Image (cartoon, rainbow, N blue to C red; front, side, top):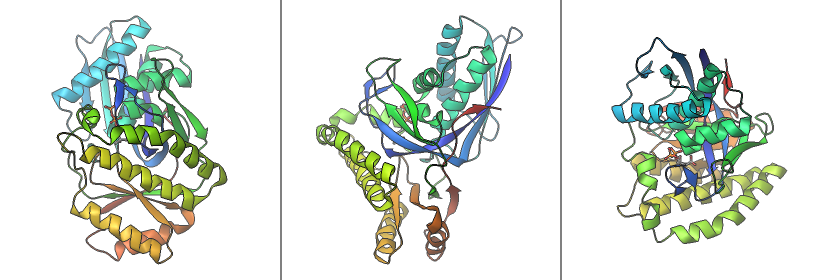
Length: 322
Ligand code: DP6
């Protein structure tokens, strides 16, 4: 009873920040993302009556006890569904640093869910798999369907799921991920978003989102990159304003993050169509069309301080069994 799956990380264009139900990980709002082809997790899960306890291993790093417990909690949810008590051995490998805004929990729990159900011999629909991945980490549900994905918030476990809006080859976009800091983020997302209601800006954000989502979907439908990019930045700043006005405030950006944000505005003034988005860490995702990939890398490289490690991502397929 063994299976291996890979799952991409995803970058959210409309962000998930705040839950309506902590234990089911139901989000306060719908969100929208793109899977990334060069930042993924590969996970092998084996269930066996030979194992007397769960073993959770990270091939190229170390999981904390807290992280291991979270994986075991998710395994328990899947074991309940499969009506088994078999222990598991889980071996995971990331192609990128975890905890620095590159969404390792998304690819990690998506790969875990797909590998574990396959190892258990339980056939679920893609929609059901996304709901189970969500129980591990909310954004993980968006790493299962193909390409460009929407997560419907829902009010129940089954109604909170993700689906593919467009396949990965629909739009030739790039996410040039600038790794500003490869260390762990200061405050993990689960903890950070649990205080979202302390921000006085949250009601305005939630009220604005449905219309923003309609606008971004229209821009995607028309492949209007400028309109799309403007909404991506508007949304990123809106989420970070909420984070920064929580009690205690959360500042995920650092000086280099800020410098890149300023540089992007300058590059755009000079005619280069590129936009930024940032999750819960200092790393910056530069979003452009494929035809501008080389130009964006060139301007990045001309600014030594800004050009750390970069990972160039294209839109990717979702999670799958190998
Ligand atoms: C800022 O999915 O990591 O990246 O459900 O608590 O595990 P948990 O949160 P997580 O949150 C991701 C937050 C974000 C925005 C996003 O990806 O939508």
